[in-house]
Length: 366
Image (tube, rainbow, N blue to C red; front, side, top):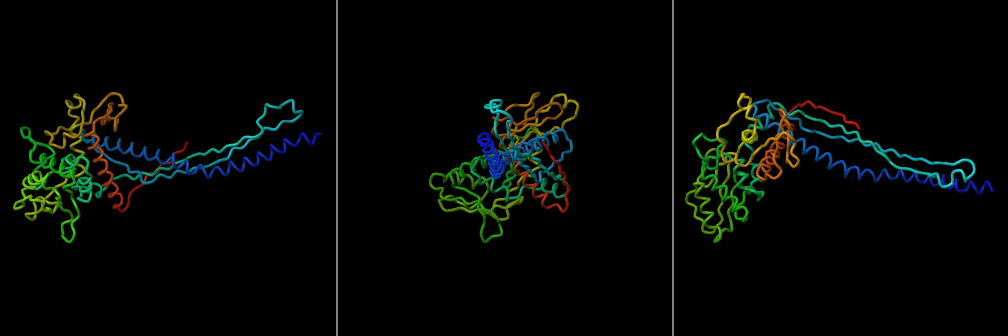
């Protein structure tokens, strides 16, 4: 009789061992699950902190303060898995514990201990890249993106074939209407797929404007575009038009377009001039004052509030205020997104080009 009573207990032990094996095997399935949950979280944190760091840089520039940045060079996430197994075994007569015990239980837990490495962005290479004109290799893809080409041109280009688009204007001056009209025509023709910037083949110029398939619907716009650029001897009669695009002050030939891109630091200075600083800080001389903004200044506004805005695209705290890009401000978000992308590209190039760079490694445990 006693042997028969021990049979359920033997089965419980067997089941317990089976659960132990299945618990250990489940570790293989938790790996992909951890990756799917952890990677987006790390990526979201990097994007958010990069935005906060870049916005803080702009605000500090308005106050004439020094700025610095840390680039995330690596994230190492060590995950430790542990199987947790348990069993409850009764002693004595069955009626003492029957129905009150869970014969066996199990599960898998894990601990994540990330190590984050930062590289201080500094040195001659970093300064040179931030203050140098944006390379055409970065500018051209942005202009060819097909989205808000007029705004991209206005933000990133300070002069096109002699037509100025300055960062700031004299007190009584007004923006040059020709540049605004050029930007509008470029946007219209690009959206209609009649104009694009392509790589040159067999010439020393790397890029060229290629205007094609425009007649008869866009013949007038193409002629206006060519005339505004000051290109002589070109008549829009339906044939393809190619104009070399060169980074220069003046066009080297009659059928070329000289372009002067802004630098990343130019974009930061323009943005800093739009920061809504407290009047008491201005009256005490704590902030830098700028001349009247040019066309690019119309595309960004950095606001402030006492409490952290709930729907801000980016926000940073400075001197008791929250400075932010409003979530419903499409133009400002586009400006800040472009600034961040170019900043990231220049930082990556500067860090890669630096011979030696100190690394700050921070272990994080939980």
